[in-house]
Length: 220
Ligand code: ZN
Image 1 (cartoon, protein in one colour):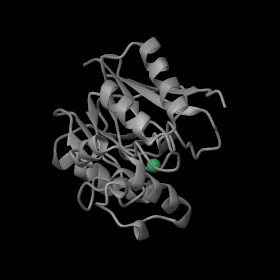
Image 2 (cartoon, helix red, strand yellow):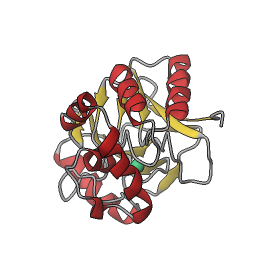
Image 3 (spheres, protein in one colour):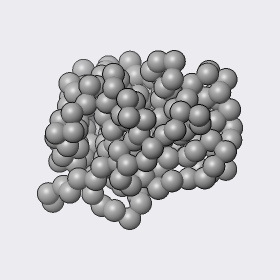
Image 4 (cartoon, rainbow, N blue to C red):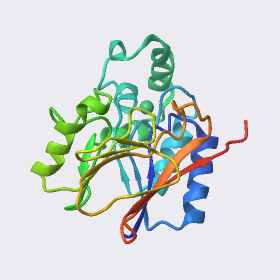
């Protein structure tokens, strides 16, 4: 498990998902982790759930996934998101509903690595957007589990937060020296919110101690 592909916030954008998976294949990864929000905002929900299920080795639930299966009320979403969640509830194949029901918003991947859709505190959840002012509490959550790297999504912005330090924008290669803890967001596949419309993904290379951020142009 040296090179781990990271995808998050696919949001039923099939061309973007296909584009990042092709990039991860070209990069050579041993496994792929999806940090949640397979559906929402777009309408290729069945196609994206099927492809994530087929290609990703670990898949978390995001708030849109829970909304789409009725585990989270429509009132938990901004008005702009509600229509597609309601549409997804009405159209998602029953087998995919059952699959989303099996997903959790948090996973301890191994001793070093935790993954969550939103934040690790107050408990692993998909409610909060992890921003700079949340970093100390989330680093403490990593420390309590003796973990070193926390993967998260939900904000749609690629970033690395360094323990005791600041935020590093998620571009190119960021080295992760072993003496610190890190919170890492690979960015969003289907709906980037950092001013770059290209689909985002990342590769965590544990042998090299680095995270590699990728952006992939998606044909309209
Ligand atoms: Zn999202």
